[in-house]
Image 1 (cartoon, rainbow, N blue to C red):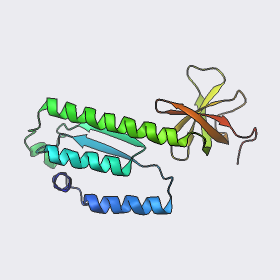
Image 2: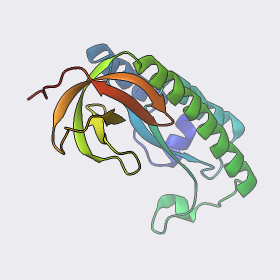
Image 3: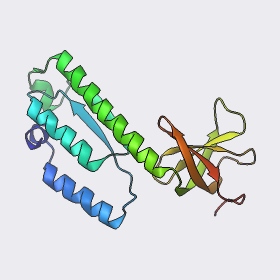
Image 4: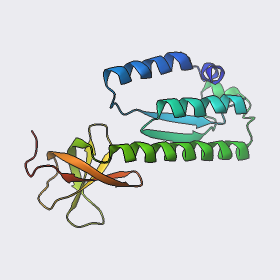
Length: 177
């Protein structure tokens, strides 16, 4: 909520943030966005938390790093009373995770059938003949191909996903430069 953003010493409002997200998506509809979220900041109400969920639903982040609030020495918040009970923080964190997991599944499902340039980063830890790479949106992709090497960039068609990993196959045998 704007109230919590202000308490956190952030210099923007939700409306300003969402305007920037909408602008970026107009310029690049496939842009991938990530964020850090803290639940249970001192004085956070259920209404404040509901605002966080609303923004999460609207922005539909590709990746969310979510945490329960804990005091950090030297910060303005460390001088505040940590008044949100741990059980409430844990429940709110679980709700964030559940919403983001659903959003992630929907985003991953929407990528099936699309093509992306992928940078190969290394061999898959458990599957022979499979290499790991990343799209330009930093999404991890497992690509089955014995001839790939670290540093190769190739076009990959997304065929599915497993949890947070896309699965793909090379579109052509030749890497793109």
